[in-house]
Image 1 (tube, rainbow, N blue to C red):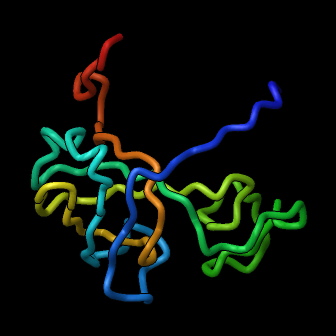
Image 2: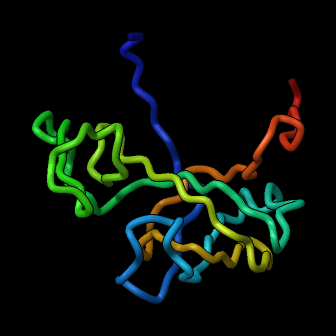
Length: 141
């Protein structure tokens, strides 16, 4: 491994009125906002209601990862599983990923459904949700 460190700067944050969010986007019908920093708002061009987007974020309130967390017991299981086979927020790199439905875009605010992030969650990146390579523009390749 290269041993490089990477630093990321959030592009925005999640805003939701509740502390009681589902543990995974696939079982959530909760609505909330992704508030994108003004410096990145132009990048929301062509993000439209009805589409799905991938949101990469930081599990900012989760406990720090330690080697004893390589195996964890998920709430839906009785036995331990490897951290890379479960959706635990306690990970070596505390990154989360959600696929959310866009309800509206107004300036730098995206209204979404499927919210599974806590209020104030730092957002690192947004990507289009694609189901095949023909759906993904090359973006300069």
